[in-house]
Length: 282
Image (cartoon, rainbow, N blue to C red; front, side):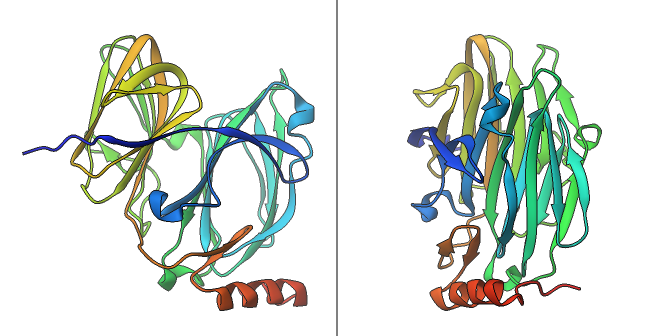
């Protein structure tokens, strides 16, 4: 018997300043890690004012996590200690596994109208993978499969699979699913999930509901355990991100851009950063 997931919690994103002065809407992060496990943080950056984002995120370290940047509109220039340089453009995804340590920068540039819109998700790495070599998956918009329904619904599959269509991001320990779902007015979307996996949806535009809880722009619904999530759009339609992953259920020691399993490991990471021995890869 299929058990529909009920909503455990509804959260509204709140404005924060990060990097060198970037205006963000933080959906969750820096608290209650066990609720969102294996995910750590979700930021929504959207602005039509370049002064809100141009200062960007200058050089900074990461260790022990994956950062997933998904751009809806605008450009983000990036560079790192691996020697990579490039631009993430509208519809592109950059899935960065920091592993043992990487130093990088991300500088939003916006589009020709000055608009910048995207998301950054942080996902934890299991203890056994925290010190693996860093790696990148640069995924262009053209590489992301999209399902288009007869009713006009559109579903982009970044990770995971839907209707036997596999997204381009595979071989991740937490078995993530990452969908960008657009529904027409008064439509229903259902998706079967592993019962023990963490599942959440984040509203981008329009309105809808699931299990009696409203889903609005800049609102996140975190679900209880169950086999299936069902969402219904309102009269203006609904667009949302769906995120699902296998919990790690490991200790979390977290300070800024570094997430390890113990305070001792954190101290080691920051000491190495100060001493110039942080980077382990060639």
